[in-house]
Amino acid sequence: MFGASGPVGRAVVERLLGAGWQVLAVSRQPREAGAGLTWLRGELDAPPVLPEAVDAIFSCGPLDAFARWYAGAGLQAPRVVAFGSTSAQAKRDSADAAERALVARLLLAERAVLDTAATRGAAATLLRPTLVYGAGRDASLTRIATLARRWGRFPLPRGATGLRQPVHVDDLAAAAVACLDRPASAGKVYALPGGERLAYREMVARVLGCLDPAPRLLELPPVLFRIAARLGSIMGRGRGLEAVLGRMHSDLVFDDAPARRDLGYTPRAFRPDAAMVTPPPAGGGSDPD
Image (cartoon, rainbow, N blue to C red; front, side, top):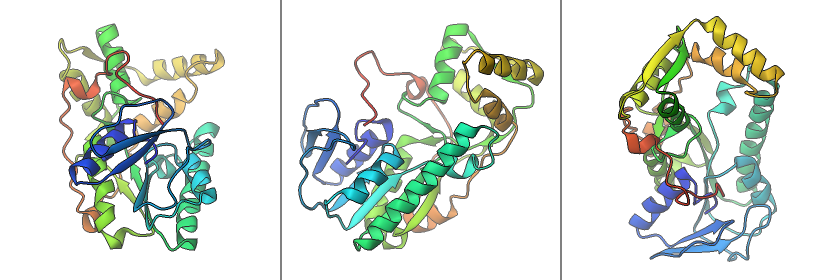
């Protein structure tokens, strides 16, 4: 497994171990082995010595790096499950050039993984999560909670009502492991949104409400945010803020019916607690392999 030390990867490892699998995980940093879990030191661009064949390969890290490794690797596996992102769909028409470049990389990587698997007679499945939360290590909801704690409030533009579907890491892990026993998922790409659609403002309000003390939600005229975003871009800070602001008013929702049908996917509603949006103690985190 690649990306096993990341928030999604850790949840997948726990699911696999609970199901009796022997897990071989790759990490940049030395890590302590456990029952059923063996760590190898390396990374996708400089992998360790691997066995000739395994039962399945999981990638929970950067998809483009995994696609490059998989295309050139000699490791044989009948099953491949890799995580990408719904950004491949949501940011196709972004005004930000960097976001459009990200979309191009994601789509190219998805195609490469599926094509490589097909040439090897393997079954590959690509999974696209939405806003991930639950481990305190995401760059969206946990960052909002961190800033809100620091400031005692969190500002949003008025009218931030675009719909969102935050998804818990354990629901993603359940879907990934389900791929192993679901032949219908071979060669397919699935969106994995959370189990509830809610306005951006409501999503942020629930994050603030689970903190103690609860920071205040401060709604300001959107023009102030646009000015700040442009100033930040001019100063070399906050790149992409204008695109983010624009999406706060847009619905970013995805159809989970295919994943429910083929994977038995049943994501939970968004009910965060403080632990889900609190970074781990210093030294308790890990590198995103």
